[in-house]
Amino acid sequence: MEASLQEMAMAMGLTGAMLTMLGMGLLIAYYGSSKTRGVGFVFLLLGIGLAYFTVTNFDDVHFGNAFIAFIGGMLGGILGIVAFLVAIIKS
Amino acid sequence: MDFVDWMWMDYFVSMFIVGIGIALLATGSFTSYFGAGKSQQIGFILLSLGLVTLIVSYILSFDAVEFVEPIFNSDLFIEALVSGMSALAGMIIGMFVILFVLMKVDTVDDLEDLDLDDLEDLDLDEELKKLEEELNQADDNSENGEEK
Image 1 (cartoon, chains in turn red, blue):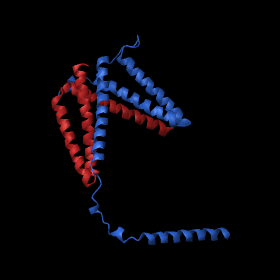
Image 2 (cartoon, rainbow over the protein chains, first blue to last red; image 1 turned 180 degrees about the vertical axis):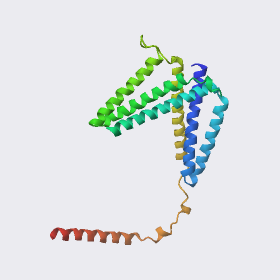
Image 3 (cartoon, each protein chain N blue to C red; image 1 turned 135 degrees about the vertical axis):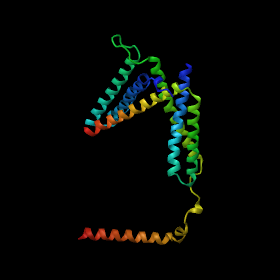
Image 4 (cartoon, helix red, strand yellow; image 1 turned 60 degrees about the vertical axis):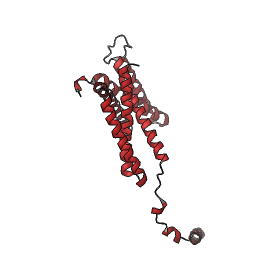
């Protein structure tokens, strides 16, 4: 595996985990019970730590390109689902 | 960060097309399998559209057809695909970690916090008798209604 490909895979794997930690951590910290709320804050801190690690340890250009590829895929997926919903609703 | 160095065409646009293709393929396969009548037909159309989109993105990235010039760099296309899949894998792993931790942590609030006075006052036998009486009354009413 090429170095850039390896770096991109690692950076994006960590970015995916970071997004999940931040999103779920926010939800758990806000809606959780008195015991789960603490776990939510831990996830939030972990997400922030992962974000800091990812931004500081990987090459800007590689990470930027990998991130726009991920965003492009997500937007395409959302557009595909919107197309499906439009097709079903209009039928 | 230098935005000029980012290759929007090779990374963003190629993955945008692949994303549309995969979404259409997935929704189309579900709708064509579980749908009936008109919705099943729409499912087949979506499925074929998704397949066409993915094939077009393949042809535009890899020199698969002789007369069509590829517009995406094949190496960069692979890199973009690996990036997207890695991000999805990372999200799935993160979700598993969160679920694992939540299952291991005691998430039920302490029973001391609950107000148990109401439960102590409750006489279950008495409540059961009341329920039986209500049921008997309902049966009697329905029988009287049928006789009339």
